[in-house]
Amino acid sequence: MTGILKPVNSCNGYMLLAVSLLLTVFMSTVLVCSFVAGHGSDDDFRYVKTNLCIKKVRQALSGKQSEACCGFISDYGEPDNMTPFAPEDNFTGVLLNRQSVPAWQGWSHSGSPEEFWAGYRGVRYLAPYAGEWNDTPPFPHDFSDGWGNPVKVIFIQDTTPEHTVMEIKSFGSNGLSGGTGSYQEDVKDIFYWKRAVTLTLSFDAGSLGLPEGQNVDVEARLVYPFHGAVTSKSQTETLTITAGTGSSKYDFPINPPGNMDPQKFPAGSRKIIFILKTDLGPWGGPVVDTLLADRIILVPSYPAASDPPEPPDPYLADEEVVI
Image 1 (cartoon, rainbow, N blue to C red):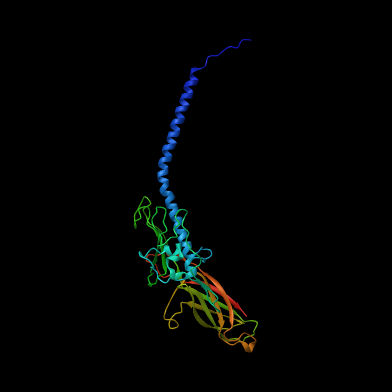
Image 2 (image 1 turned 30 degrees about the vertical axis):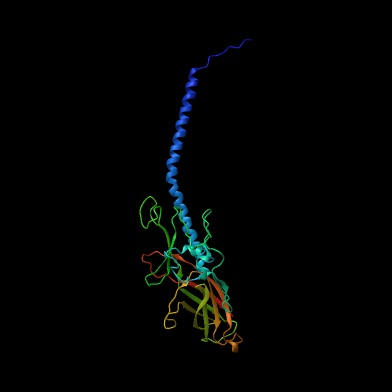
């Protein structure tokens, strides 16, 4: 049987051409939009990276917020000098490499009874991004934001005045202080890195059968790093025993006349030592200067909300000692 050839419909050719033209226009539009969007998203990316940079610097200084440890401030305490470099706001060099300040390199353990570590731990607290490593002298080096400008760390006085405030700052896309729009605004994190500590001790001596109204003196010693070395402040309070227990509040820094040199304490992992100062031997208890207990407290940093910043609220801690 002979097949019958059907003529090709010429409309199909026009349809094919029309679809091809539409696809070409569509692809061109996508490419143009991608080009325009790409130019806008470049600053978006740089802004996101800048915020990540500031977060990394914050963690390098004060550790993770949930742990309040493993950062420069937690390990080293108050720096020897708030402005160790010129310009004065290049403190990130300390975090990038311990060689930035050779005198700050030590990491050592104190003896009894403090038993505490202090100093610069490891090689660095702040790791640059890939391709931005620089371990060659001279020091210090910069840590750059998303636009390639140095991230600043600045120590600020509160209204006391005392340097309790720290500011981590990027000057935005133009690298200049201030500015509005087009990502030129400063990006910053301002927080209290030093705080007072208020400690409430609950003392349970119910097993000893102490008489009602018996006074018991207990020394609380706050152990912390200062200029890379272990130091401490002590305060002794009298607890009055009622139904076998007593409590007292300790304020660090100690108010005058007990201490004429008020000082707040760098945020981080700190140690509290409790030492008995009353002889409880007659009731079968410990004697004078017995170490009753030691505790680790985590003093957190927190945002500075006011401008100018007021002195920070004290960190409140509650501890219990049972004998």
